[in-house]
Structures are given as structure tokens and as C-alpha cells.
Image (cartoon, rainbow, N blue to C red; front, side, top):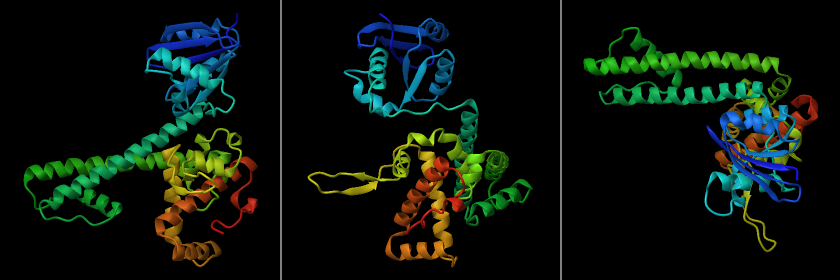
Length: 344
């Protein structure tokens, strides 16, 4: 009997395999060391291989595709219901093998090495932004203990940090001067690294056709455009713009029964980073709406007159996600698509 479907539970060193034939009969349960994985699959005839989408799954998917196998990645949350009892590697591999054969299962497209490299820049940038914020807040807190209040805003905080590094000594004890100087230098170094990454992302956006077209949308700059272009490998996997917005967690949760439709807060499922970038872009548009007099500014102003600011921001991010899907699937730019009004 020939292997038709394989469930592969990934790990750092020990991998678990669960293989069945076309009728679902179990043919193999086996543990593999890392060095044994590729030789094992090279010895198998072409078959369907299922894996949970995780940090290393795209690498292994590319390797197995190179051996001629059909590889499908699945969100771990969709695999968990197929685990019968207890969590073991063998049970996980069996659940993966069962889930990958379901006709209604949703799959994650395999990313290329270049797409993963681009996303690694985004993850590093996100980490450095958090670290810079932590350093500035630590400086604020320490100086406030001695009655010194730093100016509001990041740029002003970095100006103060530069002054401290250049030798302007505040009226604090020598030990505190040393510590604040260390924090100031670290904050400035982190800011320099962030600017380098931003320049690299801007260059990446200019070289990528999809990112260039996404940058024509209001509220989307080089960071969001390159993140979306690298993350959405196959926009055709989404049947509609609403499904794409739901994938980002920007659609309301439903609790409907008996013919009564009840909508709650947004689901916040899916890619948190992409959702955050769209909400930040929508926030920027909302803030500028009060100072602009163009058609979009007037529509947003009318919306703000009826709805709370945060609700309007998330609704606008939802609409932006749908326009992103249209740009990626139909080609062209935002202007050429003649998309309906953002908040009509």
C-alpha cells in the first residue's frame, strides 16, 4: 500500500511522522531526527504533506516541495480540534494528517526566502520601536524622580538624550547621571538603527511592484506597503474583500441565532502586525480629516460627527483592508481602480 497523506509535526530536533494511504489506513508512525527528515521524504513517492504554520514551516515546505511533494500549511488553531486526547507529538502528527485532508480546511501559502527576509526586517523594526519607547520612558521616569520633566513627544525626548550624551549634566546625583547617559546613548543608537531599516524598507518599496501600488492608498506608506506585499503571497486565496478583512481580524464577531444577527467587537484574529499598521494608517487619516477640506476629509468629518473616534478609526482600517485586497487581486493603483468612497 502506498503512502498518500503524511502529517508532519515540526520541532527543533525530533520530528514526528504520521502516514496513511488513500483510504485512511495508518501505514506509519515514526520519529525522525532532523538529519533524517529529507532522506525519509526523498524515499517516499509523491504525496500530500501537512504541517502546522510556524516559524520554520516555510523552510521545510520549500524543501519538501523541491522533492516533489505537495505541501500544505495550516493555522495551528484549525488543527487543534482534531487532537483526540492529550498532547503528544504522535497525537499532533495524527491530527495534522487528519486536518490536511478536510475539504473545508484553510491553508497558509508558502512564503519565499525573499518574503521571509522582508518580514524579518519588519519584526526587527517592531522590536526596536518598542525598545526605543521603553528607553525613553525609563529616562522620563528617572529624571521625574529628581523633579526634571522631559518635553512631550519622541523627537523632543531624543533631543534631550542628545544633550545629555553631549555633556549637559542635569542636576541629579552622579550615579543617576551615569545611568541616564547610558539610557540616552542606547536610545539614540536604537533610533539610528530604526532609521536605517526605514531607508531599507523605502528602497524595497520602490523595487516591488505590489508595494508601489499599495503605497498609492491613503494612509499606507512604505512600512505598511512592504509588510502587506510580503505577507499576502496569494491574494487569490481570499474569495472576497470581506474575507481578507476577516483574515486580518478587522470584521465584527458574530453571535447570531434564531434569525437574529448580533455583531460585537472586531475579532482581532490573524496577523496582529498588519492589523496594527492599518489601524495606525487610519488613525493618521482621521487626524488629518479635521484639517482637510477635500471629499475624503469631509466624509470622515461627517463620520466623526456620528461615531466615536476609535470606532471610526477601526471602521476605516476595515475599509482600507478591502481596498488593499482589490489592488492586489485586480492590479492597477488606488486611483485607477476608481474604488468607491472610503466611508460612503
